[in-house]
Image (cartoon, rainbow over all chains, first blue to last red; front, top):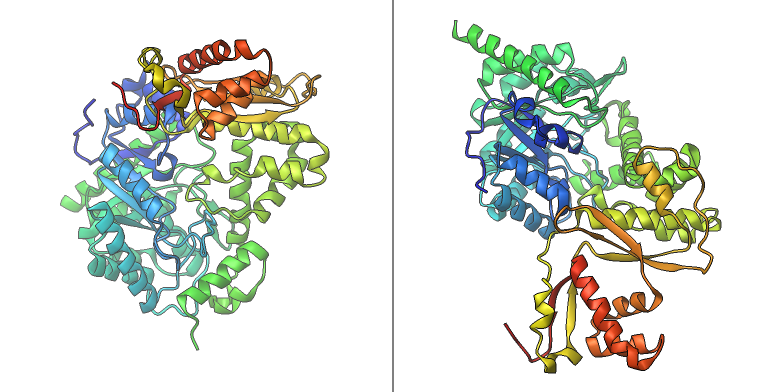
Length: 285
Length: 265
């Protein structure tokens, strides 16, 4: 079958196996009517066959798709994993995604994968290192990649720049794009005491290809990016401000734990749609 | 002097793997929320182990499973890009590590769940049709080699774990702990039905298991017959091998045939 050729715009959801029956079942067309596109976790489908692959392709043939990775480890000290990149490229060739993203982070060193999005010191050395590797990845994939700001819980004494300045300079040096996770901006701003408005102001608007929204856990003196709850009110407020600055960027709800019924996520996505419309109307007025 | 990126990463990884606190000196204010990473590392991996081994979890109960899986993940840092492979050595570890090695049913359950998982999502491959065997020229048969589907895998079991695992998969309470097989260890196979993608499994006969092991190790049809002859009457070995082969092809276990120096349409 031909891949869906709809434009990558509007509002999407992370594709989770629990929801395949809703999406691909007899009522799937109705259930997914408010979902313009889906995002997959790339690692879940690299070198995978059987029912997961069959379901993936069925969804892809009805919707545009974004690929979102968690193991590129763009800031790691080890050389880039050639086998992983080949698997990623094979998947890119198969599903023809609108966006191929991963995170500004590292996930392990010396061959170990800690399976967490670990923070990087924000220094010139890191910038040089990451930019060179982004260029390498883009050469292999033959396309721009998109990097997401991860939530962080520590900063380094070695830091010499803000994360937004780091990302802005990275896009310039490596000619890559950005996935702005608005919840992560809020979480990191709270944990480190900066103003999220400064973050949004520092991000180059022409580089933002996609927006993530997700829930978090507030622990009083710090917030953890858990992806296990609805989007919190302050994050919705920040999203509204992001839409005012960045415009109608494709936006999705990202839920990875405590996964609710599919219809609940579609309702939450409608909330994003309404807020974005209000923000765009306000910006135009 | 400012630490290099690589030095900081070494200290950070050391913190997560061993708990040592040296990284704190490089964190603003000593990193008051560093524990978020400590907690997330183990919690995430334990979640994955629970998803991959729900029947082992049920068999052991919450506390013992957390103890076993926790010790396993701490002792075996992942080296794969996907957490899909985190539990690849869990069965062997359970079988070799006290006190779990004193409960061989636990390693059996892990082997069964892992085998079903491999069958579920291994890469796709085109399987042979029945006509492929009929097309093999006579001179090719003795040296005929076989390629197996990536989803086909085998494992040893000493306990009747399937009913327990199936009950857990249906989110039912298993009625009883798995009993040992009366005749000792058996080899089981798991594979995927090509049409439905459903995972199948069954016990293999002793000679069938030996023959399959030989073929998967690069053996040919002639040596398959010789192996089967060792299990019974020599005259019956060739027809028995042919019978097995038809069954394996029908089940979708075989993806290719080849004979050195020979080719046929």
